[in-house]
Amino acid sequence: MYDKYSENPYNTDQMYHDHNGMSTPVAFLVGAAMGFVGALLLAPQSGRATREQIRRKSTHLNNIANGRMEQAKGATQEFSERAREKVNQTIDRADEAESQGRDAARRIVNNNKEEQ
Image (cartoon, rainbow, N blue to C red; front, side, top):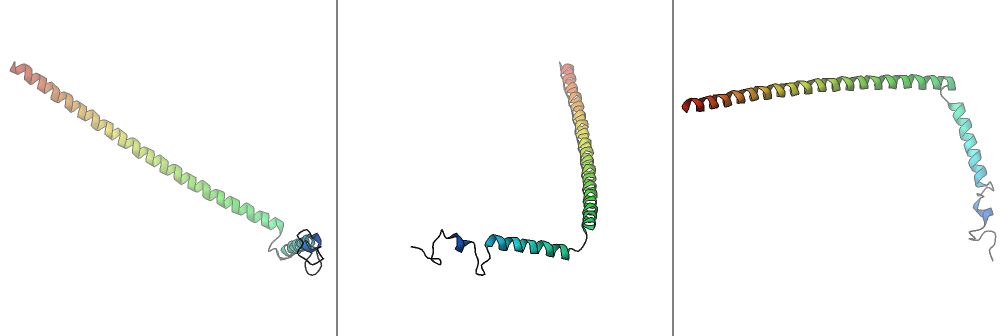
């Protein structure tokens, strides 16, 4: 029904072998091992140096983050102080307007009493 080279979808011999006779999983493992060895041989620095570089970079980024956090904290405090000043100014103006309104109402009442 199917011969060795036909389009049989169940022919695992054909599916897992390339043209050189090496199985696909074996070729993958050989390639991965070669990549690993190449990475070790071509690594620009030792593991200790890499860890030190990561530590320095982490410290640097932490310092940047702390600086930005302090800037944000300062800006928030400044904004809060300005808002508090504006609220206090508004309250003072409202108190003054209330006082002027009461004085005006008293004058009107007094004028009405005098006219009667």
